[in-house]
Image (cartoon, rainbow, N blue to C red; front, side):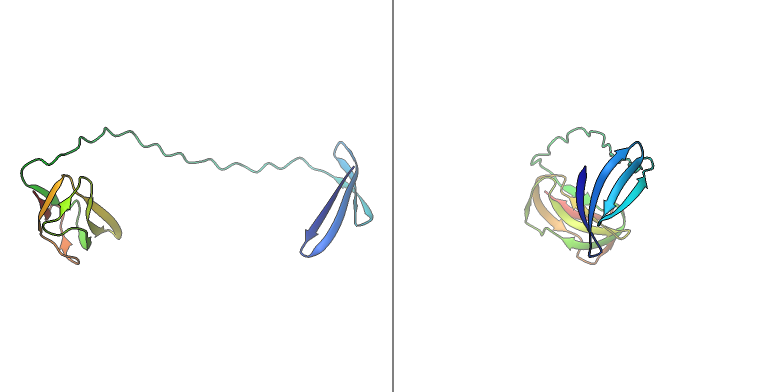
Length: 138
């Protein structure tokens, strides 16, 4: 009927299925005949796939170069671990301006306005509280 060749742990096997009726198969392995009773097919349970749903967020209206001072405040208490801007630097909307470590996680803080950095009130290593002023943009 069918012939197969297997190598298991370095041992070679020549397998021939001679006949198959209902759940009994006559099988020859390396010249030795065997009658094999087959059980029902085992079905492996399928693991459900997790599909995350993210509700759509309304598009953010772009903040253009509006006059006036804009202040970036600390969203939560933590430690400043990186500064990506300096006074006088031109920045874009949603540009990462600093990295704040809070609860052992790094959180990027982004610019909410297009403009020029007026002052940076923190330095790398500073500990800040929620609501502290970090950067002023004009």
